[in-house]
Length: 374
Ligand code: ZN
Image (tube, rainbow, N blue to C red; front, top):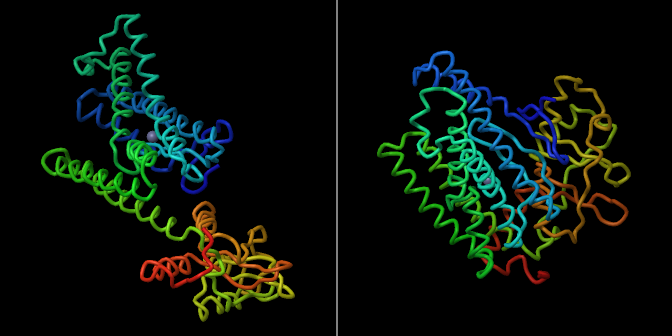
């Protein structure tokens, strides 16, 4: 139930909706905000907790909007995690087709707009004033709750449409640009515009908007640069294969060697991942983190064969670097074993090898030479 710092609430179409362990902080903050700072006492505190919980129902619906759009394009969605700063739908990847990215990015805010319309019609029907909800905020009534949720919902849609990565607006903008321009160029323009917005937001934060806005601005500024760099790297590496980046002289373990032996090998080889082979064939994998943890719990004489990961799919010399990189990101790995005919272990490819290939390519584009098949 409780894993990776979050708790599973329920799941929709195979997507786990999870609460980050820091989530209660926002409810405590809401209770303090409405109960003490605004001076609402107990009824204010209850109002704050209920209103904030409803706000997160809206956030969840927003994230489900993204998720269902992604599933429509066969992009798997791992989970939706709710934390005090909002919700994140963790998609395996973003679709590279601009039309698909546009739909996935706009689907979240679209959900909020649909909710706003439904709420608006409902408010008109029963005669609630949602034009000026802050007049009635002091009352902590049902009407005030309705107004609060209505305004928050619209704010949620508009805020997410700020055209800066990783906000939805940034992705919408990149998708629109990429329909006309090259993908790398579209990303770089979108990132520059995003950075401009981040700077404006930061300035506004500095001159009275508050420290929280400044933190968000800094975060948006950094993310814009990262997105742009990631796209540039994956485009530069397109067409290159494992053959051009892997390391053939790799240290390996045998299933009947011990954890102590594995720990020693990690120290002198400076390899964080050790493939395990038997008669030359790949049979498993152990990582540094795994060895260090199990040394404590299972003892140094445990056989590697008993604790190794067996279900790691290896790559071949012909595997594309970009697909290896995607697997690193999707599966949270830092290295993958390379095998030849008959599952014979012939090497290892790591994040560092890929970074080195990229560095060489950016110094001299043809240095990895000749065999590029684009
Ligand atoms: Zn969104």
